[in-house]
Length: 334
Image (cartoon, rainbow, N blue to C red; front, side, top):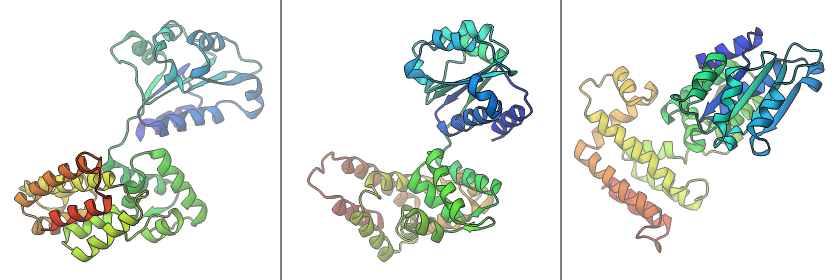
């Protein structure tokens, strides 16, 4: 992310701003930037007197301002970090007076996770004028695999498309969770390793053969035996393979397949761009399109909507998920 790289470069070169307001749905980059400031701006000796961490649930805006107006002791700056500042959302506008005239020897870092301030209001404009307002946006699912690849490449690792997809489907779009697993792999595996599905299975515990990616592929190929094996595995391990997640991923796949049918240009490059998928997976859509005409895809999408409701207990309270899984499979494949 170019904005993050530029922030890190500026902080390293001591091109500091008096306020860093870090906000948005994705906590990963907020934590990364905040931690970088915490460990970089001051020397270890300076931190004892000039660095403080406050928590939004324990303080008021006036407490923050009072501490921000202190002068550093035997250092050029003091660093004040406010974590979980979203707990102050009702009163965050009161920060405007300080933002209009901040202490130039204070580096104030506000971690405002999972929320953002209104860009039309005076507070945002004041913060933007004197400091940095960074919005950490949540990545879409189709962007996460590429993010994994970039993070690993920066650490001298590579990863196969299937292995990256396994992580996304098992861990979702939470970059913090994914990064924790990547760090575990980096401890275990030597640099220049290409991380494979086997590495994921052995070290993280995600089955390389029984997962939503393989189920999607089996359905696309109309491989009935393989699809039933995966469904039985899911039914035997419901905690690791919740039905609502499987249905959501299948819904996404068949929706993309419907989009594929509507494309005039079905070249690999255009398909990858239009569906926002890795070119490695384009052949899966080509195969599935042969096996599922447009009318059948529409019927499958309708079936998935029905089973999404039923999997949540509406009209199927007494039906075990194992039986629902099997019924869904029959309806998709028939």
